Length: 580
Image 1 (tube, rainbow, N blue to C red):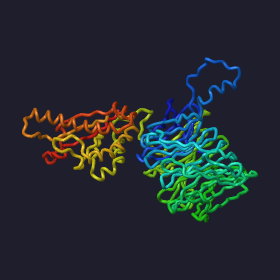
Image 2 (image 1 turned 90 degrees about the vertical axis):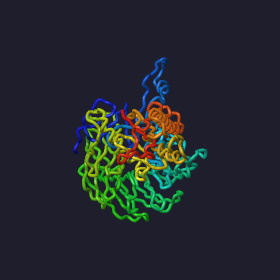
Image 3 (image 1 turned 45 degrees about the vertical axis):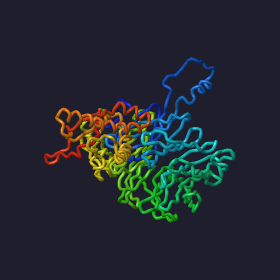
Image 4 (image 1 turned 135 degrees about the vertical axis):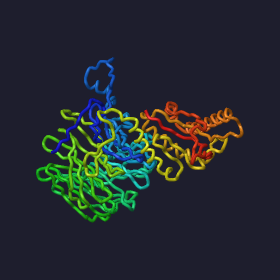
């Protein structure tokens, strides 16, 4: 295999030269299991880290180890972890740990329609969790569900109605008091639970045989039905099953793949031609794994069934389709003493075009990928440093050819220059307000000044109270701007809101003309600040008091065209973002 030599720095976050290769070191083990691109083009990933008790108390003595262990239970252990990362610089925007009362793990991350997240996982005592978060990772709603036994979630699936579907396994329950399942079918059963966009449970059902059944993954078809992949284990065999159900959970068809050799499904996706691709790991007689891909249609007809053999045992954990019909997949490749992360390119008929190995001389694996808007690929996984036993959360960005992408971040972990930072923010603001710019409602300068340019947004001569049209636009504008600024709040020094006037003031002389316009411009800025500030929650208001600054500049920056003052256009308010 081809190990990548990694430059390590002694810090919590390690950046490798100019490669977009981000390792997040935490006390004890950490891992990332899913990744997605946000609507503002940032990258978010979810997984698990371990919290620990930093200040132990020794005021009490214990007669035996069991009493001591009981005294420190729930003080440290696995917790869901959500990361948001700048897609250009590889800088972490926020890093949040759930810190629930029970140890828990997040396994799946999906975007909500409001730029927030759905996170799915489970607690270590078997409860299932789905949480809805806002764009800043704050909890909006959560649901605990499952039996009183030992349940596990495998995946969340995004649905066209804005909701999600949870898939996994549930230990058989015969307790009629269980709030989710009242009976079981075998040992382990497949559970499928559907939630609406507000995270209200719509239905929950079990499927399976008399043996151990586990729901692995699923995908929504173009007609609203859902295709589920699962496994059934018995007598040293593990069969794969495909099941199509209606949007209400009623079974349409079932197809089994039986094999004398062990096969394990990892991922199912819908392709652009509305067929499906199933990724599997298949073991040979020597119990070495290789890759198998099956393409089938909505009526369970197999279109392609292909095995991919590599020099070393390999498996794929995730796969996605590019717009040209080719595929990129990620997983692992291993020999006797080393496991590397694997990225693989395939054409439309699953012929392997290229593979790349990433990692150190230890255990490294890619768990999930997300194709970005520019055809680059964000990947989440686990990295283990050389000569270390601790796993770390890992995010990389790959080019479309599976090579490592570069970041615009600095060398040796120092911060970027203000000029580079400003350019990056300028590009993000253009993306954020793309529609408003297209509709000629506002203009953004490279110095991060935002100017309203629509006639309905200008002030009338001598006026500073906001009109209904100005308020309506501000509602939409602020709804985008404030969450965006919060995402990068560590980089924001000041948000200036400046009031402007035209140069005239009746027939008054210069002193009165200037002073009256100065006062009017300050009143315009204050009207906007007051309107924005009073709409925010207490936490955001507290932050805004640290960065928001209002000023009146009278007619010093009035709008000129062909050496003529544009008086109407000058009666405005502008926003300017100043970075640290």
